[in-house]
Image (tube, rainbow, N blue to C red):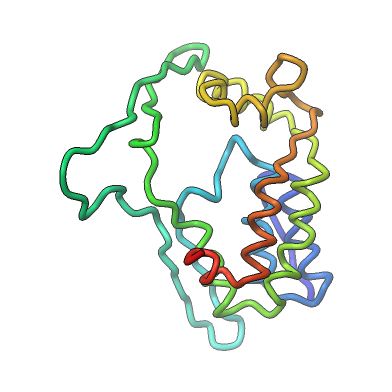
Length: 205
């Protein structure tokens, strides 16, 4: 299988290219690349977000769009809800911008189940084979790119808010920068478990 993979980081592109080397199709490559953003682009995107995937089938020319954008949290709930929602000022140099963070700012994730369903319907390789190389990246770590380092610097006030953020993004008391290795073994375990039990079963555990 031949193809070209373009992505926001070398690690993301490498994960997609590996699927083509293993005989996978474009959907396998896209799935692996999306998973790999957790290693190569942790400050730029998230598997806990949402998105839309559009692809064209080579044989028929048919175009398919799959919407797995995030859902609004709390729909259907009754009674009072304790909100966790507050403003944080981010400094972009020439200007500052107010972002709102906290649990109430996060929608129900759609990317992970969405890309899993895309792979289930149109992928060629087993999900475990797609997850394997990405899990290695997440455990061994990936060197941060210059752009990823800049993005981390902009997001420092947000990344510093939680113990998990500080554990993932701080090294020796400082925020990670270009060349520092970023790893997320917990995410590797999550993806491997999903592949082991089936992603639909995982969401019902």
